[in-house]
Structure formats: C-alpha cells, structure tokens
Length: 273
Image (cartoon, rainbow, N blue to C red; front, side):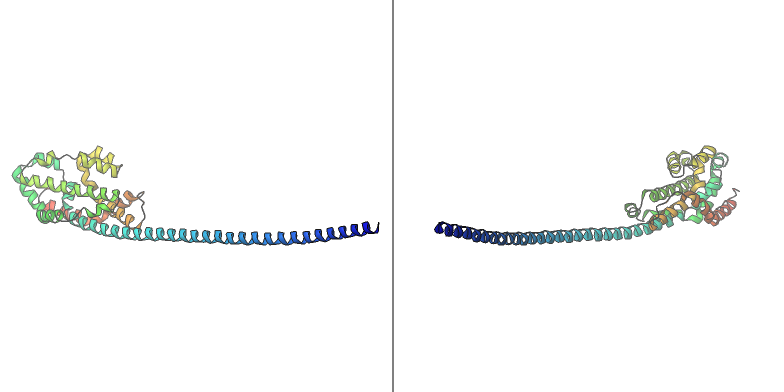
C-alpha cells in the first residue's frame, strides 16, 4: 500500500512537472514564432514601403519631366508664334502701302466711270491715281517677302483676315491697272469668291452686298485690316476672344482717315470728283 501511494505521488509529481515544462516550452515557442513572424512581416512591410517610395519618386520624376517638356514646348511655340506674328506684320505693312487703291474704289463709282468715260481719258485718269503708289515696285516687294512662315504657327482666323485683305488690295490694283491699260479686265473680275470670304468673316456684311453690290467689298477694307490687327494681338497675348472683334475694328476705322483724305485729293486731281 505504501509503495502504491509513493508510486502515485511520483507519477502525479512527474506529470505536473512535465505539464509545467510543456506549458513553459509552448509559451516560449509561441513567443519565438510570433517574434520571428513579426520580424519577417516588418521586414516585408519595409520592403513594400520602400518599393512604394521608389515608385512614387519615379512617378514624380516622370511627371516633372513631362511638365518641363510641356513648358519648354510651350515656350518654343510661343517664340515661334511671336516670330510668325512679326512675319505677318512685315507682309501686311508692304501690302498696306497699296491700300489707297482700295480707297479709290471705295469713293468712285467704277461701273459708271467705265460706262461713261472714253478709254483715252481713263488711261490718263488712272495714271494720275496710280502714280503715288509706285505699284510695280510695291508688288515686287510683296512677291519677294516670305508669306509662308506665319501660316505654320498662327491660327486660321488671323490668316483668313490677312488673305482676304491681301486679295482685296490686289483686286483693286488689278482693276485700276486694267483701266490704265485699256483692257476690259475690270468688268470681268469675279468678286464672288472674295465676297463669300468676307461674309464668312463678317456675316452682317451680307446686307451691304445685297444693297450695294460687289464694290461694297472695298467699303470693308479698313474693317478687315483692323480686325486682323486685333485678331493678331489677341492671339499673341493668349486672349483668344473674337466676340467683339468686328465692333472694335469698326471703332478703329477712323485710323484710315488720312489715307481716305489722300485718296480723295488724288481723285480730285484726276477730275473725278
């Protein structure tokens, strides 16, 4: 009995010690595994954070590069646009030196003159009108000037105004030259195309053409010139606003008064007033 009792105590004691050891070992192992997992997790998390930072830096570098590229491209484009505007103004200045021809047609009743004046008198009259313009030399200057560069960088609106103004002046010169040479070219010139171009640019001009006919074209010369200047100024300054362009151009029409006065004086000298 005593032996059995001792054996039972021994067994219980050993079991208790074993379970205590097992509990301690399990706690140690759990903490060790947990620490190992946490370490690996923290390391992996740092790697992920590092990769994210690298990707963010790369993205920022790309965005900065694109921004710089756009800025440089914009600056180059603006520089080219300024050069183009200067090029257009050079062309415009040379063409406008012949603008008095359009002023003549604005003030004269060409159709009536062609019907009533004999050719020999017309030749003398138009010679008087054309003499101050130095037409041949002016036309050479215009033809020798580069009028392609500005078309690469300026908007369609400015170019349309320029082309329309150029066409009006050349048509006016052609009519006066044909009268001086004794040809009937003045009566054969087709104003339809230029009329349609003007109506596109200035829709309200339709009523004027309906009322006054094709020679109303020359009444609009200064308005188209001023509209071109305003369009060019808006484009260069970045203010792409054409809403009040025609109205402002009409307000600026008084700038052509000296030319109109000179034209009236030459018409008087030619005996047509």
